[in-house]
Image (cartoon, rainbow, N blue to C red; front, side, top):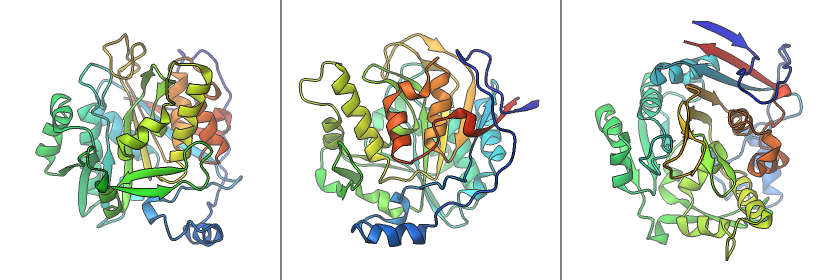
Length: 333
């Protein structure tokens, strides 16, 4: 194996020069954020696992990218390179894993090996409870092979009935420009830590689906439908509204760790497929979901700023879009 720091894959359609210096940073504390939030009346509404992580100008985002044919090993190494799972999952924490079992076509769902690796790392960190959550059906979890992983690892699968709106909690979106209210799975509030594990893939609605968009998986489908304007017809205003809603949703939900399955994914006919596959065999991990999505977007040949959800999330202050300012650790197994 060999490690490459701050070096992008040669297949990228543009190249960048990365900063090598290590800059010590200090994020705004949760306490100071709550004090500031209280002034606008949101501090008492948002539980600790919904508070977004706002970064100071001095902080530097860090992501890890591991390439290889063993996707379980890739995932474990990627998390190890950014500090190990114990850094993100305290002992006795209750962990919610948000994977994507949306379709069973190749390159459209989170690989079982990637989810298994995350579960095993949470166990090693001594999490008291680990659950995969969402409102997609049991059939989706079974046909993608993810239910087998959940059963063999002995964790819970907590499926919320998508037709019962009483199982979703209304949450105001104070910073929302398009989305003013979300409806979050109520049982999500039972957990301390959220791990966002999506697959990067093409999306017919806005070109790219990744870490940011995956959080729609804990928002009520009825609310998600409002992300698509009436008489949706793929005009620029429709796409901008969708991506603004995705960015707005991310202002009230804080994923503590993002693991992106960029091993094999559709680059046409997404998000459901079937479609043409790209196989970079990469797993990307980081706490900055904007930086994670920015990197993964380049695997498709996109400038990250061309993906409006990423651009608008950056404008919300949720993470770094400029890969020149991201510390990237790359390793090939």
